[in-house]
Image (cartoon, rainbow over all chains, first blue to last red; front, side, top):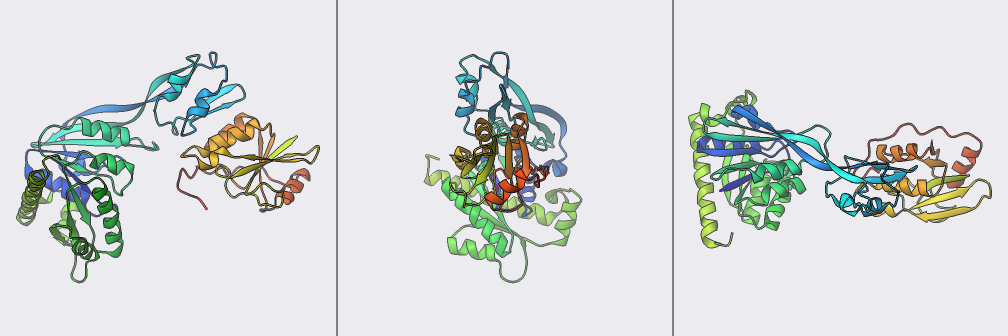
Length: 285
Length: 122
């Protein structure tokens, strides 16, 4: 069972929710797909970490073989190649690693080499498998790391901590999930961003529910949005000093507080029921 | 000698385009004959790497000088590799800038920006 935790903006509590759900589940996997700034490992503090380098394929040219036919230059959809002053120039950070230029080159002047873009760290926090994708600073796309992370996840209950927003990188995280938890803040901006990810999960036909985080007295635009759209509200987390302190000290709330232990255990049960319900009404999924 | 300028339309009365990579056309101006030629910038609609492709078009036009309000770092690499000199435009009038270049009043463009990469940049 793969549960994706996502939100339209950063800082709503994706990591809070996914880390605590994994921790309260006990035997589970926590996959940090927020590869530009992964932080779940700060809370879960995995041990026996194994690091794997993730590389993509980049073309390399043998200038002696290249005769300047420019087939590769014209082919590349991302304009990663240029032919200037009798030399082929390759812009690695623009390349999307499709390999087309290498296939096309009539003189086989192009070959491929590995270019490291980041790592995956895998370790154990109690009985929770913690996998963290880390993109090297300056790299354009973390999608190859996410694909590898999600290809390698163990069977069983898995929580996918997504990057913020609703771009390609988030779609990659959501694609194979069984259920999506949308985390939202009680502001107009929060509701706007909730609407963006709500549209995304609908596009993918994913069953979903909302966790309202940082709840205060007074109107909650995100709650209002859920009521208007008929979205199930899975839990309400108060704007709470105790939780803020635990979080800022990188402690896992369910391990420190009976109240949060009970809250996340209830949330986990709700989500499990939702997934079973969805599977029952749509066995194709 | 040919001078290239990113422009909004195929006319000397048009304006210097604010973007290099996404300019719809390039003016290729012959300083010897005063003849103006306008070429399409196929990179304008590119998904990515517009600056690289636009720079390739400028290089292929045989221009030796580029007058532009700005230029991204990938495009600048291509322009530099071809030995083309880049100057910063002073306003949006095509003729003013050509005159200024001929009179040696333009400064070299050295504030190369890191690129907008699909993020706009108006």
